[in-house]
Length: 120
Image 1 (cartoon, rainbow, N blue to C red):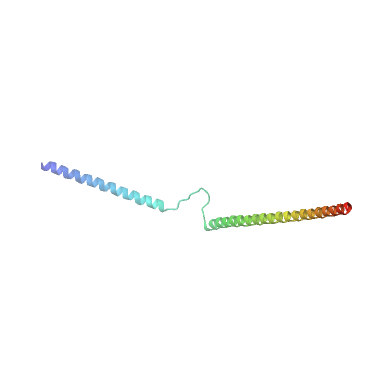
Image 2: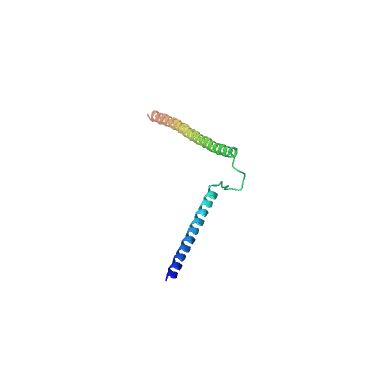
């Protein structure tokens, strides 16, 4: 009986030691993984990103944005100019048609008056 109790204590002690060893291994693994994760990770296979490279990339992005901005502004200005020019041309054509219509009306009025004079 005492021997069985000692065996049970020894087994429990062995299990506790084994569980403690597993916990220590898991802790060491987490610490190792944490060190690996905190190290620099190079997300590409190109050259290292130094301050000069990052500055150049920022300058390139800024250039692209300003280029796009100025291009769009020019496009808007061109479209506005074309629209204003088309409106002006339409007004000029309307004036020309009105002038022709007035000339035709005056000519018809003259012929009408001449017919009235002749008819008397």
